[in-house]
Length: 419
View (cartoon, helix red, strand yellow):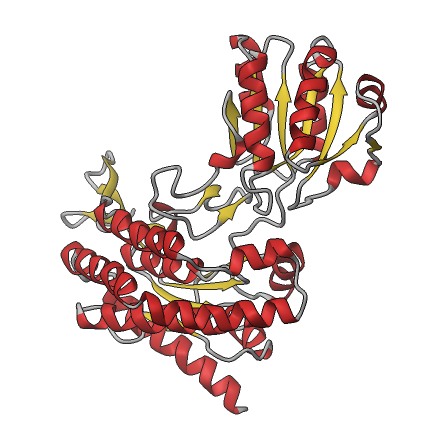
């Protein structure tokens, strides 16, 4: 057995041992640890910033994309947000030990469903160092052990954050082995981790589509995942156009480099000529490149034609595809064909159209009169998220504390036997 395999196996074995203890420790211990971790993050900001600057310099030297570097950078605001998320997770209800429901059978057996931790959760992620803190906090609150493996581009930042949080966790009663970071940048470490189904209960990959597909192809362990976010906003014929302009601008421009930003705008043909000229003008002033369908190009001159591949594309940039559609039904068909089941919205004052959109769009998060950018654990009140799932088993949408649990059946009897 190679030294690397021994190292990863040892981490997984220690995490498994710790997971049995994690399921038993009190809410008070977990919450005290989380609050201490938040305080520790803010106290050692200079050290974290120094480590992060090394990563950013290396990323710029490699001429990585601006969207990638944006996700990598840490500043006062992001450290404060990380600490705030840990405090918010600490304040949440602890689901572990909760009896979800109970019922009595005719033979007198009393059967219940008890919420329990998943066990060991492995997180494989790319350039966002804040993921290190978010995942540790959520996993600990849900009574799980966690094994983190971040991308090589953020290795210095991840190690600095991990060392601070792991130290604070241990000082406050979290068992050894509950919090782990694979510090090598050797990709073989991930390949090894994905084979350890005897020790790891769930893998959550976070990053680009190529990373997630590679993890899905290699893993022997169940995954929670989404490949990409091709998100839509449909402006209905009964929309408040002032509201629509506000929602559509936010969904594309507020932070275009993330998965819940809008990539395609759909506009009902009845209001397209009134809505699109001012909307596109505002986009162009913000530096957005527009790619339009033939009708869009007739309404607003001088924009690039959208190709079929654009409807499938996650730009993660200031690029937007626009299509004029006949009605709500065409909008729904377009979204369900080209979308990625992550986050889609309708802007309308028509109650029946809103309900039909909510019912027929097959996405994890579906909005009426609000930006797609709210698909986020923090915005949903989870404190933070460990990822977003577009799967339908066992969790969907932003994954918070409750989604990091399972359940078991508990049965009380008084001597019953099965005839």
